[in-house]
Length: 250
Image (cartoon, rainbow, N blue to C red; front, side, top):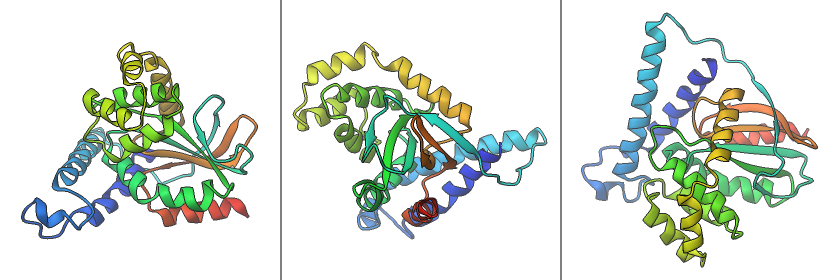
């Protein structure tokens, strides 16, 4: 339960920063970095979190003091960016339809990639955690893995991560076409649910380590099998990751 309250705390702050102040119509949000639809999606996420919190309080459960959760993961066979010899490993459990995952993707990930992944300091792994109340998330997770068969996992992941409201099959195939992929092969792979079981295995492992929402991260020292690190939940700003990664470099 402590991880859940940690998640709620992280999500509340980005909402204040993202919602346009005094917007009267969609045009007012044009230069604010977020659309009204995206704001509504974030509000919906927070409403669901509030409902879960109220259910827990009704049972007499109160927030516990935040503690560090240590996690070890075997990452053999999972998609990775960066040098395999990087001393630090960062793992993201993501939901492509999650607006908070989108926020991390468009505001934080590029800086992490430039300063840590591309410089050989950090290797970055992608894992899946599609949430049940996101109707298109499971399809997107499978589509990314199918794209990996054509060497386009990270490319399709990037496009879908930036467009959580466009994850129906037609849009996914459109993204694939723009990436010069074999769309017939991709469609067949997704529709036969070739990677459904591996995606669901990721979800089970995420739950096992204490992930209560998306995005969830594990950051720590690289090991021969994967990572020995700390569980972090929420779309934190770049500065928070920067502090954590600098601590691990000492």
